[in-house]
Image (tube, rainbow over all chains, first blue to last red; front, side, top):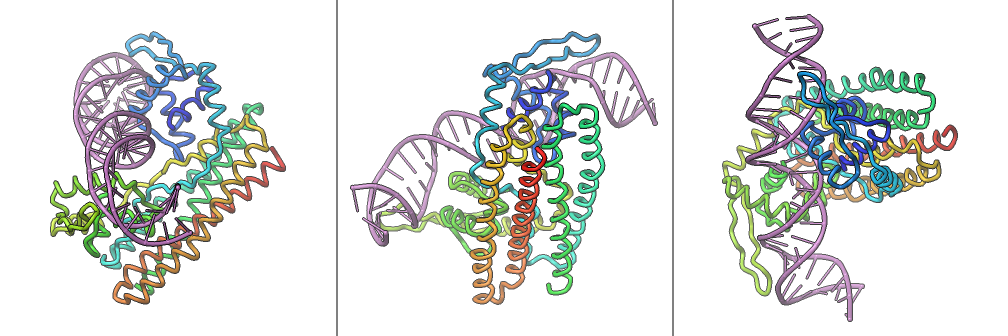
Length: 183
Length: 183
DNA sequence: TATAACATGTAACTAGTTACATGATTGG
DNA sequence: CCAATCATGTAACTAGTTACATGTTATA
């Protein structure tokens, strides 16, 4: 599926594997991420499949930049993927919940410490959504008003992130409270 | 990580790969799942690593049941895993958000249809949490009061699921509303 | 009559992670 | 002087999915 994330970004403009990593880290990171090495190898396969083409851009004292451009075939693959309905729920793997599920014989204090640590992490994350992510989207939408339908969607995913973190923190607070009282 | 899910269940009683699949599907499915084939191959590796041992149980007209029992080494591996803090946030891959992120050029109606379909799926899921999951936990906790610390944790993960689905539905409703009005 | 439940697994594949290798430039 | 940024990639690995293979018994 990473290929569709990459195609999505290449629809805006040609980019290198390195650029794509930066872009993903700044934008889709909270619902789609990839390591640099996976991006490089996926781009290679995508070129073999005719979804993108690469052109080397020579540089001094650096490896050439390898700039990937989406092809017509890539564009239509992307559009048909976007049209396809998502008919199943995703049940992503959540390490913390797995650990908690089997923590019946762990001391109260250790569990509370574990959950408080998570609470801090989620608090940091919600702040990022409210500041950095929000600022970035506002900046693009005021600089490029023609992208308003795109930024609308970016904002929708940002709102999801914010709601998710809020929900997670509320659940942690509730659970920590219950453990302290009842466990 | 699947190994720890399997070890967790084997702490209660010896089980076959087939049993473990049934158990996971009924309990941890919303935060940890695996295919039957992955469970079989993971158990094999776990036996090679000394975390479990298997004993064949002959049956008539059926393949032998291969019953796995957790070893002392498996028990201590599980306990030390449970003690380890989770220090990073997980950012699981979410296909729907990825698709939505790149849906700026898709017709309004197609997006709304996509999101309404999701809404139905999440509504079904929240109902499962409120009925089946809840009933199962209540049943175990009244039949086996000695497992009350375990069922407390199961219930905590169930509440997470319920809150997650509630949040997801609220976000979908908000987003559908905004698309209908502003997009 | 067919399909679900029981019960095992292998093989081939895709996806993703970790570690390694190279090497210049810029900023603290 | 050290770390970060720029820029590419390969190799070995772990994790997970899909498809195949086998065969009985109970239920609808």
